[in-house]
Amino acid sequence: MKTFLYIIQIASAVTLVGAILLHTAKGEGMGGIGGAARLFGTPKGLEEGLDKATYGAATVFVVVSLILGIIS
Image (cartoon, rainbow, N blue to C red; front, side, top):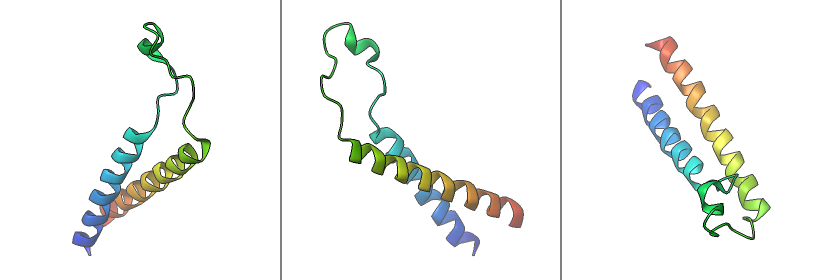
């Protein structure tokens, strides 16, 4: 049982990191200075899907972490 939970925790952690890295930056940052700013944003549906994946992976990670903390 613990092994299964550890596998789920690792998979959700990797998914969470991947989903966070796939998000686009909300501001232009230093790119706006040199004229490298984007004129068009990403499609709204893609960002909403990434938000759902991020929230889902974070929820699974926290729940599994709490369960492992209780049973260990």
